[in-house]
Length: 491
Image (cartoon, rainbow, N blue to C red; front, top):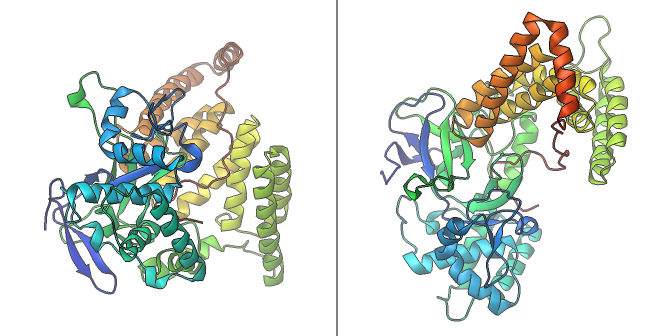
């Protein structure tokens, strides 16, 4: 079964997992297996005025739709590209008096597209929206209540002149959104900004140690000639060598959790029991639960106390971060590390979580030397746990490299930036904005490293002068969100 742009994959029935995707040919790490535009996508409610509704890029100045005053676009090109999908939405928002929530807007866009094209297979789709799983029968009481509220809000918003759908079908669409919606990020890949439905991607099954990754590409409308414009899309990219006939898998959750926790999360959010090798054999759990070895090996009771202290500290940290009290976050991290260091191993999950927060917040506060020390320990731990071509690993190594550069540790900084660049070439590809940024950093740090090796004293003098003359590139304010996860779940 092949479709436009989908010649290299086929849908098959996977034992115990329903449908899945299989490779039809060989792929090497970094190969794009397929790219898929969104069937429908919307910007999150909280960001509708700062993110372009066509390409989902974050921009300083956006053009507002003169009709509904709700939608915003980079420029006329993005606005024109959006009109087919925005036309019905535009008049419905005007009639309704205000825009509904992102879930309602996404459901409406899906149904207007069906009204235009019918509910069968769309061009380039391996499956129709009708065939996607909705898991409504697995919903708990709370989810059923949310579903009823969504259906009622949808019916208030849906225009009487549009094609009318039955309650059961509307529930199916919300069920599909609940378990298949994909998180869209801004062009730097650092913030989740919207949500979309990609029917082909939905066919890829989960594995905690997958052979593929999914990257969101915002496309490019900036080329002077429109024939070189590229569309917003997701790309399914190979992480390791894939042979014809191999199943294509992606990870729905971050690997940085013990197998039991990952399984709980998958069951709660996606309604299935994970049977991947890493969960069955609890691979890497020993690293994530590591404690100090040797003659000073702590007692089980001490370990339990420190883990509980770490969990309590993480809750306090979240509260302090929400309030923007970053000096308090640093104090909490330092106190926690004092307790953890004599007890927990270098790859322990709780130690790594504190190191990650400490390095990010200290960088933001421009306390780069201490931040670099924590970042180095975090990266050393991550390297032992994550798949060598994991996108989150690549981003973490990149942040650590920048922190080292800011701290004046040019050799270590350049090494990390090169390592991150090698990972992101595979996970994001050479034309992604993050990879391009990293390439610029790699060239700059290489040049500085040469200067440092020739004359250390002169290097520091020139660096000092350069930093005095230019505003130091401040690290972004620490976000309270974790990195965008693959699929969007309503909390």
